[in-house]
Length: 493
Image (cartoon, rainbow, N blue to C red; front, side, top):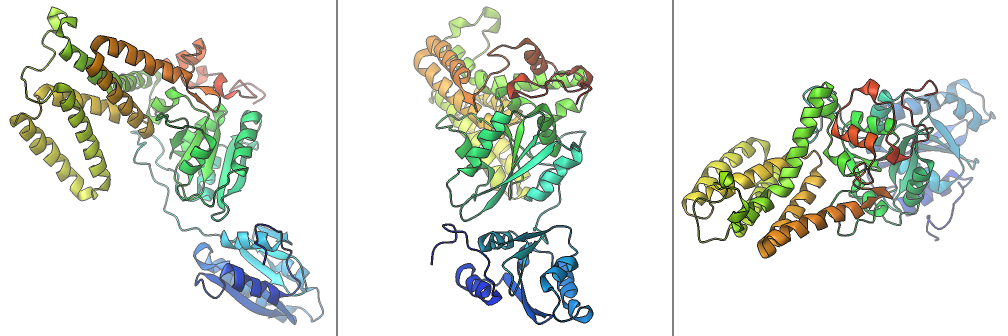
């Protein structure tokens, strides 16, 4: 028999043919969660198909009650199909004459009803996906602000966004991706703000994705959309906060929602999008600016501190007399650069261990690592105290980076700079930092300059990045997203 994806199969007139097809191709009678119910309504056979784990059993029971009661109130010879149509009290009922379409919907959690002698099926939305309640994301916590975050249910995620944006021009365009998984992916944007060219590109790329499934959900989508290669820096931004996603949609970004993923993809983004945090916008402009500058300092420290300190250790003559104390006061048999790498990898080991350690034990593990391992390593001469200090400060700078992907990319850049400094000293530091900067300048994400608004320089956009301005003063949407409506608070908005 021809594969269901190779040909569109119309719904047979006989419900028994539908039943046989479901048994042969879909696993009816083999898969325990694929259920169906046979009914006799006014002398005609009626079958209902559903997946038990994805449907609301109460809604299914209510549907069956409505169908059975038809025999008590209608006469034989009536138009059964029309009567059933009027008895379906659900808010979402669709008719379709394609068998493969009905099967896809049933496997997505909807119910399909076929009537003997009719080449159309009713598709009723009775979905009740297993999900957890919205809660604050662990990686994007704020002191003051909303505590609801995205979950693994795309319907709930879009609802959380629409609750914040009740504009009639807000669109959630659904696209099915994956030949076997048939995962639901939605493009979220405001029709009269978002760049139509960007929407068309994303829509085209999603529809042309040739893959069997999306087990890694949004990450798989990112790798198809962005030709990242070996570039470690994130070219899209992830967020699990509904307020952050809504804020970017209002700016003109396009947000990609993927079912089974608690995070969404924001496009397009730059380097500076990854170093902003919702906490800055929950404080007054002066406090928000202070928090932002502190975070910028932490990000810069995570990249530059260790290579710069290593350079001063290797060439103490570069230090002025007042800073001559910088450098190890004690020496060990292990070169300083090796100590730095061991300390850096040690922090990475601790991070991984914290992820995989049960919560009640994570505190004890941290104490063991900090007190026992650190002190003993210094006592036996494996590390000098200064190495522990600077590695710890650089590690703190890494953790102040809001984007986990960017923090890891910065760590890779830091390690490469340390290698170059160890090999070539001052020329290595100068050339390494220059190449690092040029690499970021030449990076583009969806044809968006990665260092905008610094390069290419845009004064207004740069001031928005440098200072947390009051919302009434932020009249313009960022030009980098090419918004159709540039003004946020114009009378035509």
